[in-house]
Amino acid sequence: MIAITQQLPHRYPFLFVDRIVEQVNGQLVRGYKNITHNEWFLEGHFPDEPIVPGVIITEAIAQLAAFVNLPIEEVGSKPKKGMLVSMKAVKFSKPVVPGDRLDLQFEATMLRGPYLKGNGQASVDGKVVCTVDEMLIYTPELVVRKETARC
Image (cartoon, rainbow, N blue to C red):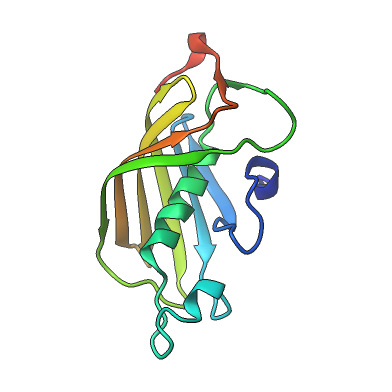
């Protein structure tokens, strides 16, 4: 099992990945976030019918991207900070509510220097609730071994 806090600098209440369940070929990662009734972002969104804000879903996908098994050189022992730079297209197709398990997926399509680009998806009970096309993440501390980069 991967220790989430060893890879991500995020901490409660802004940590949106509960577990990594799969890493494939150094380009694909899957994980999930359980949405509880106690989430701080549900308190006012909306009081009588709480739904997870879309920005939280996209942030969860961006956090998941940190777990793509990339061919990197370690630059230090602390978690590396990644910053979301852009998303070409984001689509939401169904609300996410308390009690849902938000299944997350990120697939890397390009790695160039400190930039990682890929596509993300979130689903609940096998139904897609969000897609993110061409998510671009900048990680200034990332050093890639060029001879082994596959993206």
